[in-house]
Amino acid sequence: MAQYTRVAGSVGLITLQNPPVNALSAMVRQGIVDTMERALSAPEVKSLVICGQKETFCGGADIREFGTKMSGPPLIPLIHAIEASTKPVVAAIEGVALGGGLELALGCHYRISHSKAKLGLPEVTLGLLPAAAGSQRLPRLIGVPAALDLITTGRHVTAAEALQLGIVDQVTDHSTVDAAVKFALSVA
Ligand SMILES: CC/C=C\CC(=O)SCCNC(=O)CCNC(=O)[C@H](O)C(C)(C)COP(=O)(O)OP(=O)(O)OC[C@H]1O[C@@H](n2cnc3c(N)ncnc32)[C@H](O)[C@@H]1OP(=O)(O)O
Image (cartoon, rainbow, N blue to C red; front, side, top):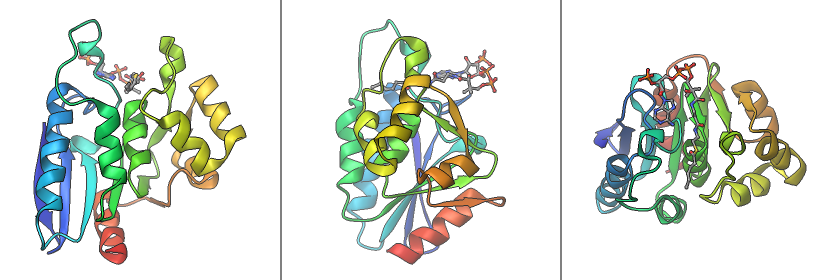
């Protein structure tokens, strides 16, 4: 699921909650849809931050649901709705942003990463390609050669490399959520 709180007066904070890596289960996807709707319809909320609980952003699709019947809202329109949000959305990336987790972050307008975070599109290691528009958003953000490298190798990049490539906008050694909330206030 996803928890919604309002912080710093005008920032809607959406926290993904699905231990151990906040994977995008049906309940988490539904939680994102519900909390986004709540934040977008609240006039006092001017910008949003999406983070994961327990210092991990998101490990991607929930591998425990592989081979089960699809339920809950699909990921592609959900990420599109975030991208289309009239209120700026900032991803606060700690731990990992992998697969669908990075695709979710790529749909946000800005990404702030902790210095120890790892980001990547490891779908190829499962015999898949990024299917939630990561294969379009990543090349748009960092160019085709760098995106092709990440998509075809599935390698994880450090926060420092992600900053150098242009995947993230800022890296912090301190509280990523605090940095993302400050950033969200500045772009509201
Ligand atoms: C439309 C399609 C959208 C998206 C496609 C995808 O997202 S494909 C999936 C992409 N994600 C991955 O491939 C991530 C796979 N996981 C890892 O690489 C590592 O587990 C990770 C996250 C780097 C953590 O590594 P670490 O060595 O720290 O721990 P460990 O591998 O032992 O994992 C800890 C527990 O987390 C569980 N877990 C990991 N990933 C997922 C996941 N995606 N969904 C559900 N659960 C996940 C793992 O099973 C361990 O559980 P445990 O009960 O402790 O054994």
